[in-house]
Structure formats: C-alpha cells, structure tokens
Length: 110
Image 1 (cartoon, rainbow, N blue to C red):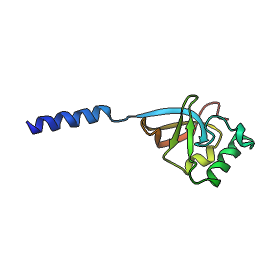
Image 2: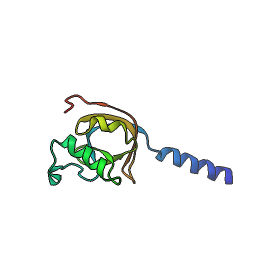
Image 3: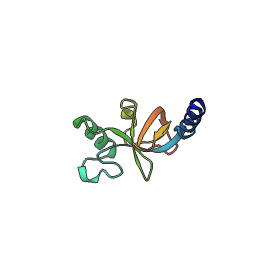
Image 4: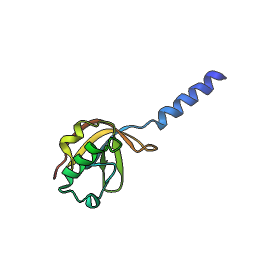
C-alpha cells in the first residue's frame, strides 16, 4: 500500500514539474521592470546596468510585456541589457524565477 501511495505521489510531482519553454522579452532589472522613466537614466540599457551594479538586491530580469521574471543567470544578461532576447529555460511560477538555459538576441532586437 505504501508503494502505491509513493508511486502516485511521484507521478503527481512529475506531472506538475515545470518544463523548458522559450520566452521572448526585454532584459531589464527587478527594480525598474517595464518602466525606466523614474530613474531618469537613458537609454534603458544604461539604466539596467546602473541599477544592477549599484544595488546588490537588484537583479537582471526579463520583461515579456506583462510580467517581470528574475533570471537565474546574472552574468550573460549584462551584454543584452535593454535588448529584446529569446530565453530558453524553466519558469518557476510561484517565485517568478526563470532558470536560464540559453539567451540569444530575438528578431527585432533593440
């Protein structure tokens, strides 16, 4: 009986596990998100880099037009700050963290 319960529990976990997907959006930061106007720094790419550099609690993120997702990779996004990208990875909905497998420029990049 315990084996059957364990088997069902394992199956349920596998069914609810996040899967890899492709996300398209702009590399931003967790402080400004979609709107960099409040900081008074332009262009947006400069604002993103300054926000991340000067405040250790601020992280690189992806803004997809509706949501801001914190990126697990905090090195690669630096070269794409303010640019449109495609990210392949796994989104953890509860934490809004996007586990990054790859980042590449998207069509219509800037």
